[in-house]
Image 1 (cartoon, one colour):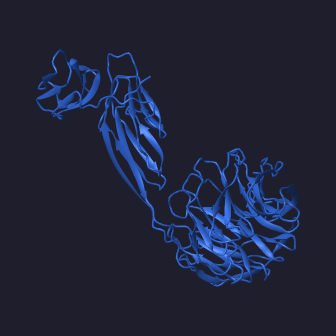
Image 2 (tube, one colour):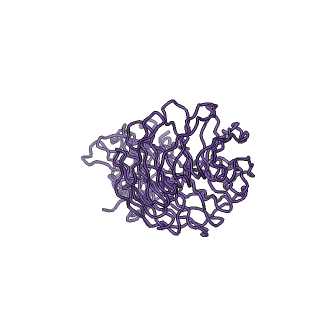
Image 3 (cartoon, helix red, strand yellow):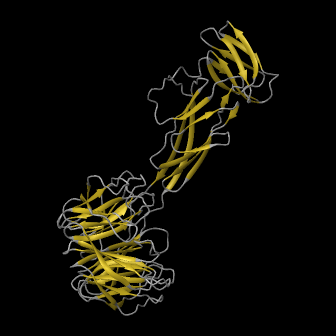
Length: 539
């Protein structure tokens, strides 16, 4: 069926975005060879603190944040042998942040219960697998108590310890994964409301996904290729489809990482690679670093590499930032309370923590609306919006009390009347714009047919008839009379009021007519002539 376009609504919601910016790194002393780093509010003052594992001094360092991006001197707490990974949660349900630390060569984890003022009690140790590397905390059996999962590099499995809610943990249950699991993440990877696990397997060059049963157990691992020597892992929605994806740090010498887009069912597509600024990526994190509401990636290598996501699963070229020597772990949070995501890296060779504060300008959204009027047919109306890349959603209000959520919906009018269409458009930078058509959709009272309006994604297959300039109507707006002129006989002429009722009707064999409007009240009318409908403003 041929459709004629009524008008084109040019809707531009733009975003002015600056280059990602982070200030010069400021360093704070930690223990000997800090490797892994996390953030939390350990002393309950509302400011974000950091904690690092110190591989060679067999302890962890807590550095309390001031809320300005600065940190106090480290306070150290002993743990097991060669701590290499750390996670935080409330293990005993007292509302205070506790810690769990992986001790690589003592093959156990240390639990430190927080006092709420920044100090921690003596450790309680739990044996896990051989050469544990990564750890995460979550409620795996949906009992409201925090559990732990540990990736064991040399026993090629994951140890799950179910929490009792008192700060202690039950015996381990092991689940086989790929060879050499170095990193582990927890997330609902198949959208069933249960927390799943994924490991980066350094030796078998793949990712293992363990889907949860919801009772603290997991199914057999499914493996997905992940590039060379994957050793770090993060999860986010990188392509904006509301399905979780994975980003991987690859290799011992590779200047690259990999992204695996999720299917939403627990599966992942083949990896695509991204280049980073240095060799040997040791950790990877994801967040919105530039404020455009799209997930970005950062990795530690010989430097800190930040890649801005475009929302489709690919990334801009890396921007690299200098930190202290050979950064290992990285975490991201708002350390100076300015609403922007900052970085903290753990630097083993220099024995310190580097803080990089985000100086990226806040994105500015700009909205403007223009439109053009084209021919229509009585039953098919079309709006062609031109969305910028930042527009993520729209709500179309049809003027009859109904609305539709989406970028390209359609609507059918069943009752006679005049309807004005409005749209609220939402952008990825958190802004919105509201626009309403001055033109109106009409359904004629004596018509048995329904009128449909379509928000068009493109004009493929749509025939553009001659524009409203033929026949010509002038002046418009008009006061006393209007002239209708065409190159051919005008034929049947009708004028409809805002209710779709006929206010004027005539037949003309001429190519030009002057119609007296004195008896018509002020308002908006529709003129039907030569099979076309045109808008008329009567002053």
